[in-house]
Length: 167
Image (cartoon, rainbow, N blue to C red):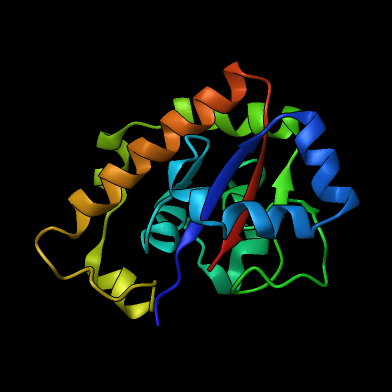
């Protein structure tokens, strides 16, 4: 089974509705209509690889990474600790935290991530998924990194919060 990281941009009103009743979030993202949501993206299985290149940390040590980039894996706020979205509860960044992530991501280039890419170290540290010796692995990460960067930039421009969950 694979683990996919998802990101959902929402306005304050929608976020508050999810905080009031977390079933609304689950119903939205697991509905048949979810494939048509333009405010929902996933970065496939690239999530830990991107996180590692950005912070030097893994899922096991994510709490040692510094904000705001540490919030790309687990947001600092919970939607509902008791709700399982697939691999645990959804978390979120509020509008200001989302803006901080956008600013941090805008300062990082694909060239910088390319320099940080070390397939041997990533395999040794068991960074998910363990594909880092594949010749296309870096391109895979960079494509999803650019998608994530654009997503957060749009969220910041729209003054939106971002909900994160693994499924």
